[in-house]
Structure formats: C-alpha cells, structure tokens
Amino acid sequence: MSQFTLNLQCSPSTSCASTSQLPSPKAMESTTAPATRGRIVLAFFLSPLLAPFYGALFFAQPWALPIGLLITYPSAILFGIPSFLLLRRHRAGRQWWAFAAWGALCSIPALIVYAVCKEVPHLESFTLLNAAALVGWGTFSGLCFWLLGVAGDSPLRWRDVLDMGPPSS
Image (cartoon, rainbow, N blue to C red; front, side, top):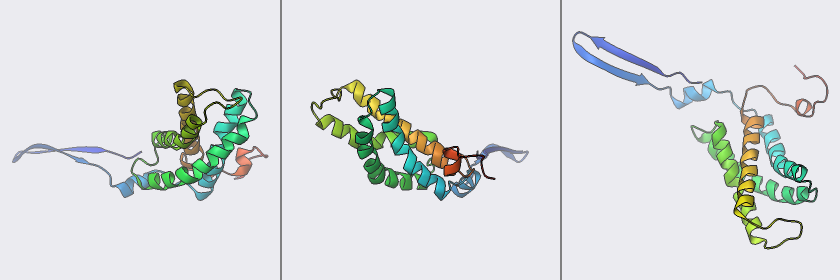
C-alpha cells in the first residue's frame, strides 16, 4: 500500500495551509510486488481453461469443454495479451477490479459468436440472462488471472498448483 501524508504547516507569519504529498508512480510500483514471468505464463495458460471447465462441470455438459476452449484461448491470445500489456502500464493495472473488467471485455467475442449462432442443438437459446452469465464467466477468468499472475509476490510453480508433493523452498 502506498502511504499518503498530510502536512499542516502553520506559523505566526503565514496562514495555515495544507499540503498533500502523493507518492510518485515509480514509488507506487516499488511498493507493490512485481509479477514474475512464470506466474504470468501460468495465469495465461490456466485462466482461459477455468471458465469452460467449470461451465461444463456445473451444467453437466461435457461437450461444452472443447467448444469453450476453442473460444477462450484465441480470445485470450487476441485480446488478453494486449489487454495485459496495456494494464501493466496503467496506474491501476495491478488492481483486481481492472482485471475483472478486462475479463468481461475479453468475453465479448464469445458473446458475439453466441448471438450469431441461432439454434444449435444442445445449446440454450441466446437470451439476456445467458449473455450475462457468459460475461460473468469472463469476469471470473479475469479474476482468476489476477489471482494466479498478479496478486502476491511469492513464486508460483506447477508443482505447487498441481499439489505434487511438499512445496519447494
């Protein structure tokens, strides 16, 4: 967290004036832990997988997993990588809500494909509620990306994610 100080300067010869000192953007970056390259790669690999996996699992539709993967990974490559590079330069780029919003925006191509497909067997019709659920899955993916790749400062390894024995130190 950055520190915000408020100084009140009063002297007999001058009136009281308040001056606020905000830390510079470089100082703010130094107070937040940098995301490691390995965590970012892991997040790009796993977060597009989670939405179709949980969608297929929760709705008991195993056929939805490969279709979801065909939509989420290209969307992550075409929209997620440029979005991440843009967020990395922005002041609010390490905040959870920024990744949730970009995850929702990255779900728009899937939403368009869903709206264009009229009646597909085994697929519910396009409604406002189903569209909101799809955007919700995109938001979930963005939050998962933030949790895996950006939040925290400890290294995250495949061994830790897949629970393959005790964590290495």
